Picture 1 (cartoon, rainbow, N blue to C red):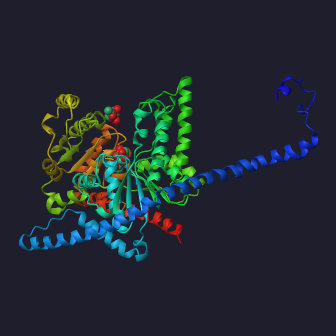
Picture 2: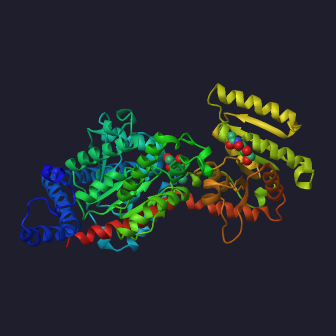
Length: 573
Ligand SMILES: *[C@@H]1O[C@H](CO)[C@@H](O)[C@H](O)[C@H]1NC(C)=O
Ligand SMILES: *[C@@H]1O[C@H](CO)[C@@H](O)[C@H](O)[C@H]1NC(C)=O
């Protein structure tokens, strides 16, 4: 090479001192096969490496797998025996006392059992191992409710399937975890067929481990953690319920024939984030990274995020089945993963599987009928913490505007604000809101109920006519589902989950109204309080809330899981 550099340019076309024959018979053919090599050989080698690693992992964990299967069978027998004893005891007790305690979960059991019998025996008998990747399974948040509800649904539909949760919570035993699931979420799992495998690498995904390049670092961490998981057990179906797309990527790499699924609560990188870096975009003025895209640092950051988004979308495309917790998340994931999924021939549509909300309890507690209409007052109810983004100010201004119209509907209307006060900041906000109420001359029309108890909240849900929500771009809005379940006519912000998911038409007829400005909210209040047939709208609202029950979650989950079980079944002859 140095010779080439030293040689005066332009004299000899090939300064290697190379025989033209060598050139013709070696270099040119080599050059010709280079694309072939990069197109076929490299991917083939890459695939073979993955399969080899997979083979190694399976061999390494086969013993544990046998052990788990034996354990499940032994536990099942012991459980059945204990259950029988308990049932006899129960029967004795029942004959003396007579309290029929129905916790709502019974209906889902019955429902799931119904599906199972329809589904055919063969499928019901599927007895593989489902690996749930949820390293923070004992956290007790909304994401965990989804995990437990999905295991529960899986157990109902495929009673012989073995559910395994990969978790990093070393310090808690299976019994402790299951007891907490029962207390915290009122979800009763069938203990024999759920087991826990403990990861020792969870610190790799903590943000504190990666002070710089946190997104990329945590993703690498999740690959390390997934390797840890597969070194414990190779599953027959792999499901990530915490948003670790890179773990799914690793699963597909080492076990190409194992069906995979992702339940996504929130995209790791969102399309809003990407466009918020751009100062000229409409989103550039919002969010923590607003307008940081300027200058050389900004350019680098943009590049890094783009690169990350690109890799993230390829990892996401490794999932055979994709579920999201809301339409908002579905839209983002479709934008990010859609193209790569199509290229990878993943045709199962990205499905919305709403997390379960306690709709049944409200249905039982609040009557919605012509008779109960008489006990409803012209009350607009806003249940929300006194946080700035809930925008109580907007609602107060709208209400003042509505009162000023002095229409028939407005004459007796009252606004009731129910919410918890978490700290001094909240208290200060409430104080300022009270000042605003005075200023707007609506003092005798507005009530504050701070830190109301659940029975008090139920009472307001029975008395009120209209449910209000003023937050811009709320991702979901469980409170709005609760309004609907209680038969309130909703007047909600024209954005986010309340618009996309919750306050939608039922049978082509509205269940509430959307608004953005104070004037639009005032018009919404007028419409909601002057409905010719309010009971019809209330019943439709209640119907709409049924989409968020535990049963509905179980149904949607089972439908997605079915795809995976069919794939897993096709894998083994
Ligand atoms: C989906 O998950 C995100 C992140 O945890 C949460 O903010 C949102 O409320 C969830 N949506 C639903 C429908 O629960
Ligand atoms: C409240 O709503 C008004 C009107 O849409 C808007 O201008 C304002 O920024 C909102 N405030 C917050 C804190 O979201």
